[in-house]
Image (cartoon, rainbow, N blue to C red; front, side, top):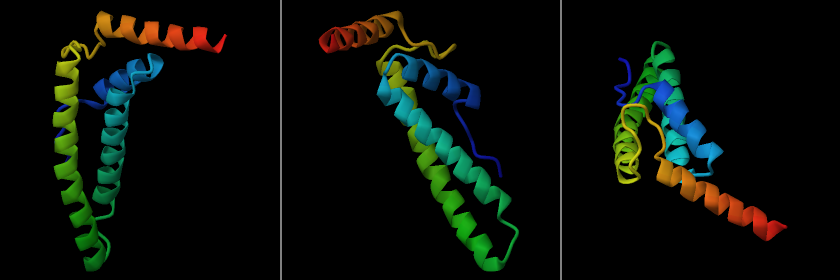
Length: 112
């Protein structure tokens, strides 16, 4: 059974790219966790048909991933809403970009 997703892989990658580029760690960390869970789920799905014990183990892991993945996607949706991201294009708002750039610039000035 495919893992239900609210955010397509492309959206996760796009959010992650913007977040990492502008050092906005919270959305990036949530996206990394979502991507890791998707990989874990896919692994479990590919291993389901071995022994009966293996099948039970993999089904249990997949069930847990379904629950935690859904919660992380709800978390990401709320973070993006709270930070005023564009929920159609998954683009970081300009105000947040400016804030991240100013903080980065300030850190660089401290180092010099």
